[in-house]
Image 1: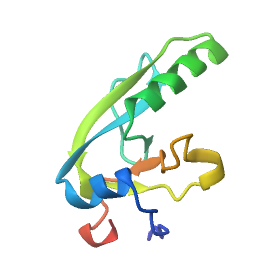
Image 2: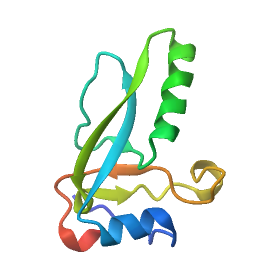
Image 3: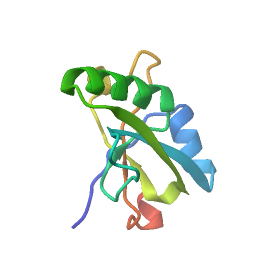
Image 4: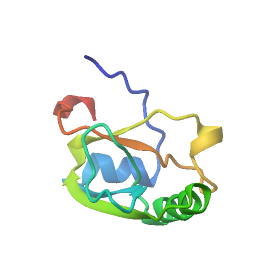
Length: 107
């Protein structure tokens, strides 16, 4: 299966994913989950996932928290999300996908 990913806009996230060898990724999950799995949507900003975890805890009435992992940048791709919906107030992409099977050339 091939994943087409549109060109990620310039900015902090693109700089990190194209220059660093590893990156810390974050995911908001129910408290019973402790790992990030291949295919999970992730963020590069723990403030974003902490806010999401807080909101989901209130909405679902079960505790959520943020989990993190340090992974090779080649295993993270921009999700190609709509900029008006998912970029956040700081104008950069916030949604990514953790895919440890991504070939290096797809970054």
